[in-house]
Length: 255
Image 1 (cartoon, rainbow, N blue to C red):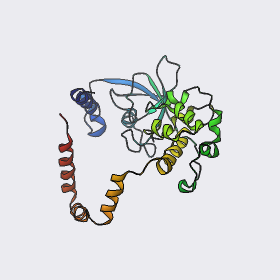
Image 2: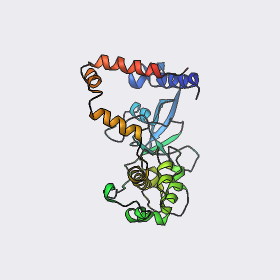
Image 3: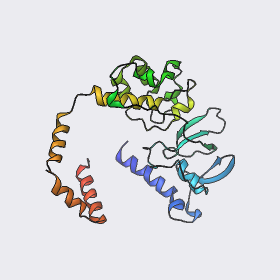
Image 4: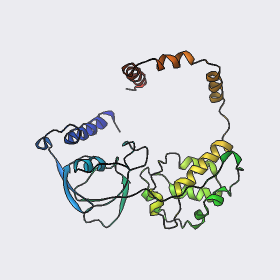
């Protein structure tokens, strides 16, 4: 996305969000949509995210809100659009409201994670079946992939797990935020993201070659090479830390 286009979108969001964040009078909001939350009708500013719109409507989040930036996977949402029979799944913090949207908030997927000690496991393909035998029930319907808000190839990494391909599982699931939407929709009751987590952990501990640069940096830290820099930051007050962060980010900008 171009920088100017991104800025225009953010300006629209900020404008629509005024009455949520600053208490600006509703007459200053130009565009509105009608949504339905648990069957009740609400008029909310257009361009808000689902999470922001629910807060504008008077709902208070005490759970399932997390980072509010699309990283933690806590705000799984189910919704339908007017005149569309399909059930949609997404993250409330990432998805914009649409006129005629019917919303239902859902609890986190009841997905049990197997207990294991990575360092004591052998690097064998059958470990996936050992801890998550339900993957053998996969019917390759691809519902999990369609439900993924990250557009990950979920079914493909489950098939890779069946083959014992740790590297492929790790590669395809790397951006998983563990929201649970894949598991909620799966007819075989597979807990995809826990399978992926097992694969990434096994590959990291047993499959990847040790990175020489990382090992050298750890040795430098242990020898105290950066102690002076650490102390410098620990002695900073809040404003100094913020300024140091801004300076760092500015130095990384690409025009």
